[in-house]
Length: 283
Ligand SMILES: NC(=O)C1=CN([C@@H]2O[C@H](COP(=O)(O)OP(=O)(O)OC[C@H]3O[C@@H](n4cnc5c(N)ncnc54)[C@H](OP(=O)(O)O)[C@@H]3O)[C@@H](O)[C@H]2O)C=CC1
Ligand SMILES: Nc1nc(=O)c2c([nH]1)NC[C@@H]1CN(c3ccc(C(=O)N[C@@H](CCC(=O)O)C(=O)O)cc3)C=[N+]21
Image 1 (cartoon, rainbow, N blue to C red):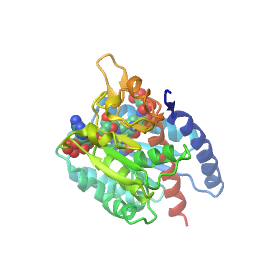
Image 2: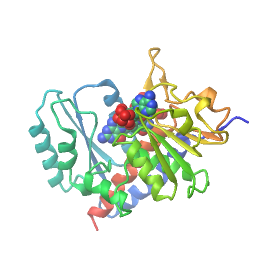
Image 3: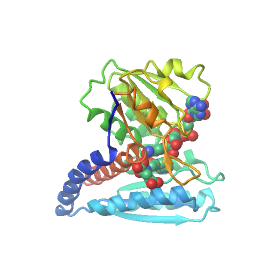
């Protein structure tokens, strides 16, 4: 039986309708949730992600402010801009689009964002809070993935979750989020020996690598849930995930598509976190 397709696009639409109501309530209380996005350089993919984020904000009534800087700015200039936004009481969320040009240390930048405005959930304090189960901003992509899996009404506790990829923005935190939900978590990465032997043990397989069609039916257990985080632009201009969709859909029980899978949920959770930030800053 072919897998059911989990539409991040549809789930995102439902969740955003609910978030729009929350924005309305905040506005009635005199609070206009505001996100400030910083884009350094003119990388086309980053520009298009930032545009998508701004459009999503607009659609549900969040104010978004875009600050763009040339690729050759120095780190101290960027840190000053962030410090200014930290002080600005009309700004609730700050997002610095990654990756940054090589003269700028990403960790310095992330550590400069006030933790209460860190709607990406990348600040080490917020990561620590996530790992110790405290209230915080959950990183948007991992949070979106958890939301998608929870929408399937499956019991995560005790399931074997295999994460392929260990980046700070997706792989590492998504494993931690599923651990919090009592899954048994295994991480794989570029040094993993015999990837297929491990991924084929997964009840829930999460792939965040950035290599088109890395995962085939050979890597997947019959009936597994497969979450494809990869967004790869092919030479023909089409987007493609890290999972060979047509092949894997024949063995999986559920599978997320690319596009319209994890991507729209990432943006939705950014909206969610910005509203949370606005609410908490006015408590
Ligand atoms: N849909 C969404 O919302 C988002 C999508 N993305 C997409 O997800 C993908 C991953 O992004 P990101 O985590 O930032 O990427 P990174 O490049 O930071 O990390 C990639 C990870 O994959 C591992 N890896 C590389 N090659 C292999 C291999 N052959 N087998 C197993 N593991 C391998 C690397 O291992 P090692 O650590 O050993 O180098 C690394 O941990 C990209 O396509 C990106 O565009 C990213 C963010 C959000
Ligand atoms: N500080 C920071 N925060 C991020 O959250 C962040 C980042 N930097 N840097 C880059 C990655 C990537 N990322 C995506 C978000 C949405 C889609 C998305 O919506 N994709 C659409 C397709 C978009 C298209 O057509 O290009 C989809 O999958 O349907 C993809 C990727 C967030 N990231």
